[in-house]
Length: 182
Image (cartoon, rainbow, N blue to C red; front, side, top):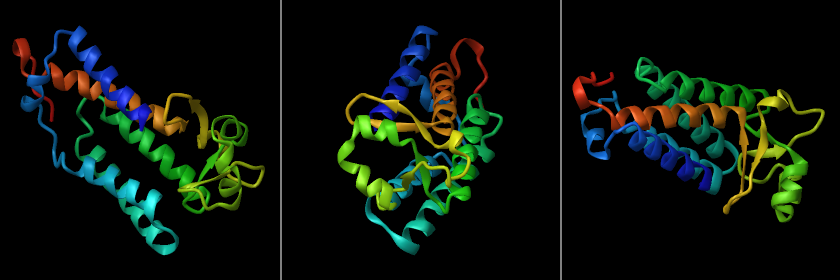
């Protein structure tokens, strides 16, 4: 969560430096924008509260929604990065039974209390990264050591780059003759 908040702030700061305004965001057009928060909410619910078949259905739904949102708005600045990040995460999850491999040394350093759950495969959408997990380079391998701590994947970073680009462009929408995206 801290990482996502930091990314949003980074987008706002860059947008402000580029002489954008938060008030310009209302001029920025995205197709079916409400899909994005719904996808995030369904992913959070699946990870935090569900297990078994309910988890699987909800996590797949969340990624279908994310892919649909990014695809519908593909021509908007930042959206190709967001789609690439989403697809990288989907590939990693699909290759590992809808679980994201997490780099064990990073987990041990950041949150040793959850190591048992991680190794048992009962910690959210994560499983311990081992020689038997697939596409480990797409797993959660980067430690973000700001409270609350989290591990990030290549897909998370790609998505975040796209979100920063999207926010700063939204802040510049309609200003000084700039065309509104979408």
